[in-house]
Image (tube, rainbow, N blue to C red):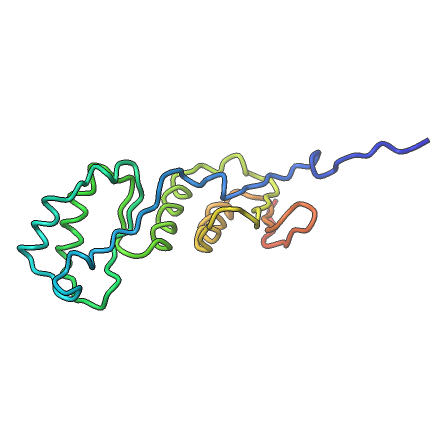
Length: 170
């Protein structure tokens, strides 16, 4: 008589969190102001304001935008603020920095606003592999949210996880 195969992982109290599931849809855009600089070096206020006035801001509707300058130029703070004023009615999120910083800020907001009550007193596995680019900081932020509620936290897959934390009071 053969024994029935039992999937112990499926029947366990493990809760898997895949940060890829939290990935907000929307195009990520790097907005480089170098083309709006005189000789790609100097910001002339009058010219800059003219570019801002004539730019098609609606094209950033529902996009995530990172404002940057890819050349070695001194950009006054007000320039990024002026861009933000014009982008704000359209963009989902705006940061000054690169696309990595943008992704980090997006995940920070998502994780901060998400309730992890479903993990209370449960063993949690944070899935390690994903098809999308997830910033390392997102994993740290996730751990910070899980520590007060989870019974234990592991990283990886159910079949080969790395233990990270065990609540000794439970």
